[in-house]
Image (cartoon, rainbow, N blue to C red; front, top):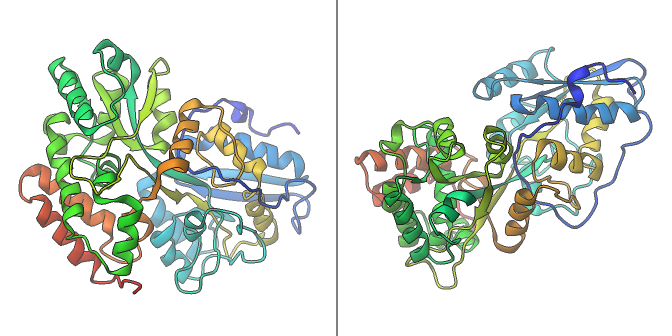
Length: 430
């Protein structure tokens, strides 16, 4: 099939993240789209402007096997997307297939009645439970979207800077801080953190201190009510960020995340704590950069047996607009998004770790992130479990850590405010 857009076949290097698993979802990737008829145009909305070339190529592959169907990918600015989508879904000019948020941020869209339940249409029974949870309504337990990808927390490092300064990949906390001291002494910023954007700080916390509070074990304890966010291990994990502030850019609360990425890709900073979704952006920022990833060793005082963790969560799911005039064709497209064919293209073109089981990874860094999650995975707790109410856990911790860096709060106060805030709506499952 000849592409209607000549730029569709550009190579892309944009990235996000999700976990490859062992089974295969049912495929509907051949033949014509059920109920679509001839000349059907499906619109797909997203907040991922940087992924447009990749999705154009992916949807060319879908069109080649679904005669008469055209898929148009329309991305919007990420900071404006939620409002644009809500307006579109409330009216008659919204997308056929919207990219929707996950976990708690999905619930308002579900409650509005804007999405078609997909139970009986897609089979996610062999998928990771944490991934599937991202796509469900909290009240009715129905599936309202197909998960796109699993993001994962990552500490990227510059292999050349490590080698030039005689640094081996640290396997203990003492080696990690010693490496940071060496880099600082050489005039290199050890940790490229952009604390001006408070949404990044809970991710930085997971990357640098997930082991200190106990990862998945702490999740179970806090969800059951056995522990809360005033627990000494949690407070100590927040304090880890304060201890590491000296390794971050000066006046870190005035540094935007884009500036932090530039520090890293330009070789002025040695490590960048972020997500697997940053991979292709970093590669594009400096194609010559020798990227590596490492798991931060468990900080001093961590629970017994703690080791470096890779926190994961699902994001960027696709759904069917209940007001779409092409619901049958839109459902067929979303069903295809649960197939290995789509999942593999997400890995290869969008550079994400697909949510679809059975996907393989040619990019060695992406493969290592996936392998790390399989070995030492834990949930990104404040997103997977504490975004179902307001104020959300990520919002509270992000602003709290900002204030800690500014000197107006300590780790105990940040943790207490987090605990008080989420307890206005969170109920443990005892």
